[in-house]
Image 1 (cartoon, each protein chain N blue to C red):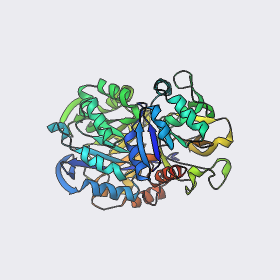
Image 2 (image 1 turned 60 degrees about the horizontal axis):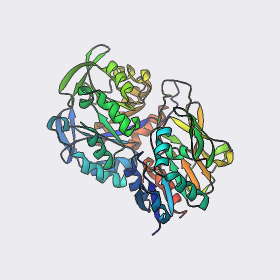
Image 3 (image 1 turned 90 degrees about the vertical axis):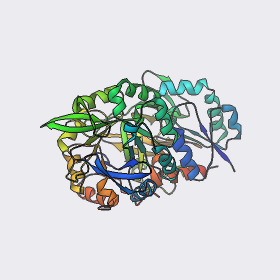
Image 4 (image 1 turned 60 degrees about the vertical axis):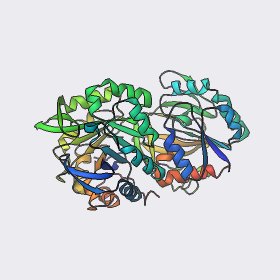
Length: 212
Length: 260
């Protein structure tokens, strides 16, 4: 069976993710060694925490080249939460940090008009909508996902794609709209946690697995 | 007022040994069911998260939850929060390793507030829920308790809640000891005295007897999420039924047909 590797660079709780991928039908390996990746049919890049610390640890452990190689070779890659933000050109979280540059755009603080329920971080369930008011999603990752389906978010920063063509779904939080699913060739990024998003999340993981 | 986000509905499972138990005012505990079966039922009904609380762990220095969480996380794919008896980073690591996403910390945070900061640095704020057990001492004044409502601390709940956030807690779980298990409604004043004044989500807990109680604590208390036990444990309402009533009262909820 083809293996999916979860990239373990020390940031994020990988246990739930591993269980959800296994439940969705994947043969999952958690790996802290980029040298292992030649045996991977697909990579999952998870992460929670701050961008700067996360990406410097990611680079220190030699993952940058491995992930870029995967991208250029067309190997399916899924970035989750902070892992999605790594895909962009740069982030402004506590300073300015270079990302992987796979998706052109920048990671900035999610800004909402402060209000009683409008708190940052954005924690909880929220809906995925096709961009430009279309009534269905394009992109294989969101096959069988109905517009308006809700998924679980925990984040304060978001990646704003420079090109609308890279955005598969948007999410509205209070008065702010941000890209929640992005895509470039076989690389995908999701700002939410599919492993914690019930049936919708499992469907998205199944869609990713079916790319192998 | 228009509520601009989805309000999370969170069943709370108090665990003693191998069972889910339920009390009144955090006392008079009775067995109500099997944690695995109940968690699966709530997941299938569309629960947005689950909270497991090991209610005697702080007292006896043990933690029975790991096996229960390990099992639940195999096929329940919503956020799982685990609390009770957490004293060190290793406890948190073990709970996350079992498949939990967040930990709720009360007693040890009061004994050693810096622990919240250490835990947030090690695992991220999103993982650290500050848990407060509040007892009303006069109008508009509440005192924090530890050890499942047994030990008084002298801390003012509103100040302690704000302090927990500045120490690094990513959410607050606020349980009213006065209302807990009574089905007489949440302590709306308590929640309102904190939720609008902190930048992190507040989960209201204690007292839900019917869907109107949940409505009140959201609309008047400004709770970002509501936890409840009794109302779900005794099959008075399914999670879906509660959500339908909240939706009718203009509170946005996640209407999943089910999680599976």
